[in-house]
Amino acid sequence: MTLARIIAVIVTLLVVAAAYLAWTRITADPAVATEAVRQEKVERILAAVGRIKPKESVTVLSRVAGQIATMPVDEGASVAPGDVLATLDDRVPQAALAQAEAAFSTAATTRDQAARDLDRVRELRRKGVATQAQLEQAETALRNAEENVTRLRAARDQSAALLADYTIRAPTAGRVLTRPVDPGQVVATSTVIFEIAAGDAFEVETDIDETYAQTLKPGMAARLSPAGVSRRIETAKIVFISPRVDVATGGRTVRLAFDAPQIEMPPGLTVDVNIVVEVLEAAITVPRTAIGDPGGAPYVLKQAPGGFERTPVAFVDWPAERVTISSGLAAGDVIATVAGAADPETLRMTDVIPANMGQ
Image (cartoon, rainbow, N blue to C red):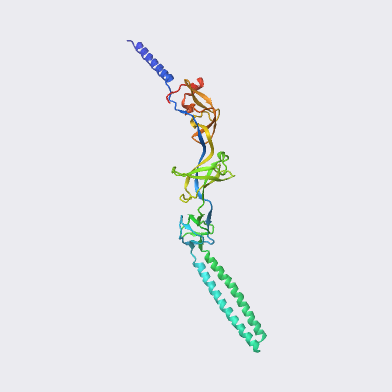
């Protein structure tokens, strides 16, 4: 066999192999996942992530600057009004109070002596021994002594009040949420020393994108569960929707109140929030992936004799894995679960895609 004949045979075999591969590609039945749609009760859910926070909280500051001496309570502790939360180093105000008390005591002694002197001078004046000038002088001395006692009493009380400011007490009953300082730290009057949750009322706060927040209303029900603990579900309702959009996040703050008091889930806990926006008693839903051209002329690939056909649909665009079909499908229709499962070139030529009929 000549070289030319060998080359011709090889070329012929390559052409036959290419034709066979092309034929098998054309005639092969692509595997298309399908789903039979049906009408059922549907909840349109808005999913978000939130955190538990106290309904009311109090920030505790010190009225005076100083160094923390003791802190008998820590985060998580329950406190009653007036409980000692912390003390500051009070050696200076203690000394000032001692000095003020000593001065007051001396003034009180002087006043008492002036009162006795006045009584003695009055008696002498009654007997004609003391003069009127002596009596007036004794009255003036007592008057000055009483004024001095009043002044020093106020100074003593002021020193006592200042000393009391070095003891930080709980302003309300509640639970200590944070204690950002430690003993030995020097604090200013603007330093946050404690944050206390007032009472046992807690709520969940979340941030909802402004696009979807406008569909929410106070009173809407929600299901809450600690992040990662899907079996525990608590019910709640929306109680507040901020009218202001946060320019940093593009969202609006939404708060939800528990239907029943919650004391086991601590403040700061992350929770999954599922808000029930709408309940439809009989609706058709399909996987979001089944919608082709969702931003233009949406369609699904509906099974028809011999293949699939492109069927226009209308749907509610909502951030979920499944979307609600408002028109274009009926119960019992079978659709491809992925709109792009077929060869786009074939679809443009025929609008019919050979389907794998096995369900």
